[in-house]
Structure formats: structure tokens, C-alpha cells
Length: 229
Image (cartoon, rainbow, N blue to C red; front, side, top):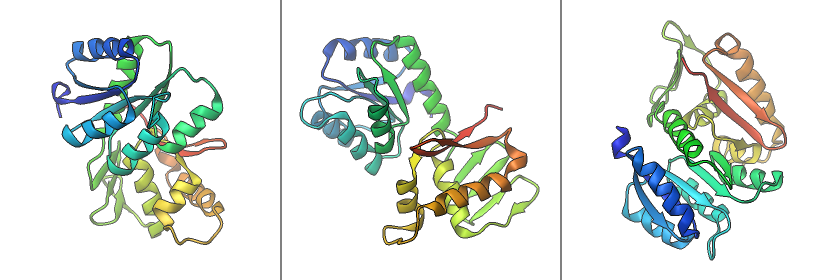
């Protein structure tokens, strides 16, 4: 989709912040929608095809954490959390709720625009059923992973784990979230199985680190970073 068609939601109770971001994003060709709180943002999500959300944490009513979780559960779009909070615990909470990026106030509008563009590049690498990690292609229709010349023979859980991470490059997933998404709500085993499967994936794709890497964020979880060709 062309940049001119991208629609960005800004949810922030500070009208000056919204105006600043609207000017910077509109200048780059994005269509901007504004919400002064979480409830208004939810309403706008149902009215317009939002492609990316920038949300403040400290809003009246539904705060940014709850809004982030709502969006992540119902929409496959990038999320940037914009906040004055700079504590590690707050960032961890934001990432666990599903945010893709975290920007602390005060900020330079130009930097935020760079982050918006970077997230769109990440999300545009994927489609619903075919995911590209440079040379590696994940075909979710046929449950195949290939490098263009040969197909990798993988256990189903490894395939599902790789697919889940690769579908949202740059997004951080906690162990608990991966257990729920890959092994299911009724899984009763140890979450250490995620560690084991991550290790196997890294070994399997050890020759493809120039294409993508599976990164560990200590104390939080895992994410895939796709290398720029």
C-alpha cells in the first residue's frame, strides 16, 4: 500500500501533542485521525481502516496499556506507545501488552516519523499466509519453510513458533504469550519449552543470520529482527 494511503491514529489527551504529530505526519503524506482518550480511539478504530496507532499511556478512562491490549487483540497493526514515563517497568508492561515501539516525551517529531516509517516497512514484509525473511519464505498455506532452493523439514511447533514471531517482525512476545498462541490455552507444561524451541530454531537457521535473527530480551521474551537487504 502506498504511503499516501496509510492512516494513522493518534490517541493522546494533550491537544498540543496531537497537533504536533498531525503536522509532522500529514507533511509526510499520512492521513491522521485524532482521539483524546481511549474510548474515542476504540470508536475511531471501528470507523476507519487504521494502519498504525500512536497512543499515550496516561489518558483518562481507558489508559494506553488497556488500549494497546485492545488493539493488539483485534487488529494486526503496528503500535507506538508515547509517554512521559521512562521507567523500565513501564516499558516492560507496554511491551507485554503488545506495543511495537516505545517513545518517551519529550521527543523530536522527525524521530517519531522515522519510527513510523520503520514499522510500516516491517509490517509490509508479511502477508496473511506468505511471510518473507529475506531469503527465507514461510508458507503458512502449505506449512513449509524454504530458502528458494530447499525446504526445511520442521516439527509443527517449531513451524508455528517461527511463523508467529515472523508475522510481526520487531514485536516482542513474552513466553506466556507464545505459550498461549502456539501451544494453546490448555497447555499444562513448563514454559521452558519456549526456550528449547527457540534454541532449536536458532540452530536450524544458523546460516541465515544475515537475513534475520531471533533476539532475546532478558526478563521479557523474544522477537525476530529482519536484516535490511
